[in-house]
Length: 408
Ligand SMILES: Nc1nc2c(ncn2[C@@H]2O[C@H](COP(=O)(O)OP(=O)(O)O)[C@@H](O)[C@H]2O)c(=O)[nH]1
Ligand SMILES: [Mg+2]
Image (cartoon, rainbow, N blue to C red; front, side):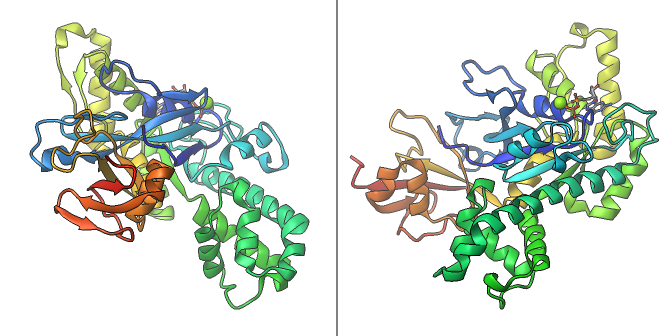
């Protein structure tokens, strides 16, 4: 199976619906035998981004995913997702499960910040009357905690490690990112953060405390971008709050979500009661006689209060945005047989890899197998039926056969 590399962290205060969102995202809405990895650890699972499957575009009758699945012409490709411990005010100083939280998000590539858009929980996560708590205050509060933690962590590493070695460093940028690798920070993040904080022309050994702070903030934004899930959107009280959140933080950063509605729909689909593809704006009841009156009422409510006003439950949407917009990943399909588009066993389009835009075909070879990268000779673009060299930059939906000294 392909390396599921990217990790999405679900963060937020307590009782906003993080675990509900995690369950909904990791629940497969169809019956699939022998599915090995829905949960990896108690709080880490596999969710799936959705793409129009290229087997449809290529007029093939079907495909045989080794990981993920394909339903009704949509390919679902795995990504890792983590249900992070709830945050409370003061978490960056260790309050509540502060330290556990911080340990968890170190490895995340992108964060989904779940907010109670219904305003039904206070900052400590206690239930209050819907409409009384302020989700904007909640967004600001959590953002403050994350940014403070991040800044303090960078400051600590800077003082203990970076400041000394940077004086004599050949390449200060390398010194910085190598010392920050525990936070899953790449060279490209450091470059972009320096640009954003306008520190390009100042050698890092001369950075002041406020320079380092500005750099830290920019680094958090590029290395752990945040997208807001305005959850509990099914509540009447959420309507105005969703609008406010969108106005304040921008349409590209806020998605109205009903994690509970998605969980119910996926469970109903999994037990064969309805036909539903995650992300869709409606569902079909397969056999209404098999449903209780209460179940029918809940499904009607989901249709009226969620799908109709918002177009979907938002669960698939937010995952898509995190992966394709915030992380800018594309999907590529390696195959062993470029005419059948299959592996050696005849499985059609067995693997889909999510890779960063700009990834070369040789880098892909390395991701599949080190030896495949080392012995790389050339690749075949199976759709355009042409040979490409090692520096070919992959495009979304490419199907490639890699020819290496390993191939037979
Ligand atoms: N109405 C509504 N309730 C939700 C939604 N998502 C979660 N909840 C409820 O909010 C409460 C807390 O959810 P949970 O997932 O445990 O929150 P966590 O503490 O953030 O993990 C539970 O009672 C959920 O049923 C939603 O989309 N709509
Ligand atoms: Mg929880």
